[in-house]
Image (spheres, rainbow, N blue to C red):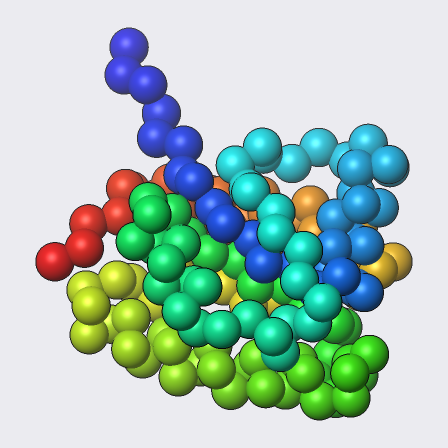
Length: 137
């Protein structure tokens, strides 16, 4: 029987919201695939696009970016709005590198949304399984 493809996902998570949501999912014992490598950042607005490109270069099949709940509702005022603009531009750039833009996912997750965090990880893992291993041309 063939082994099922298990994608590697690097997750950049805002310290104040998305990372706290991940913590809540853990302490609530919510089940989600163990495919992510979480990296807590002070703010999603501090994620340099080079970090995301480096994650793909190092073998990530997908990158999840998690920021404060809604654009404009950020502990650093407009950090998640900056993140939104950067991710939007980066998705266009990824196409030029032969990387499907669905491999980069941006989600707004608050500290109280452990269930949403678990759901997002499950959905992203399933989507990446369907896409298969990354093939950069």
